[in-house]
Image 1 (cartoon, rainbow, N blue to C red):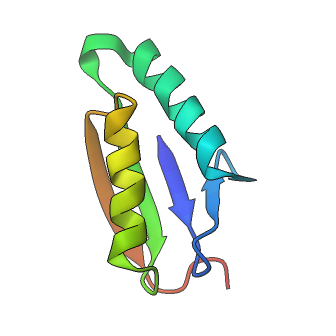
Image 2 (spheres, rainbow, N blue to C red):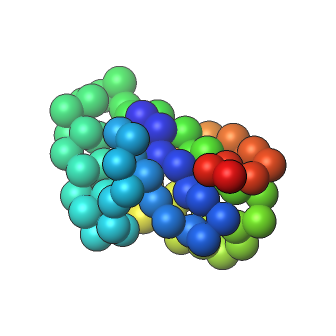
Length: 79
């Protein structure tokens, strides 16, 4: 599962902008569906996003059942 975060820390999931509470809900549902195999979350984050915002998202994902989070930092997404 991939979530992108642009330079203004806007979140995108399944090619649509999404608010944080809705993303948590969706990730929780996907984590439940994944069961014992676990859910892998890949965060594609603009390099200008603060570490604090990235950590907040990763922590929230873990809290709803995501087992692994990978970070894919990229220069200037969505320009």
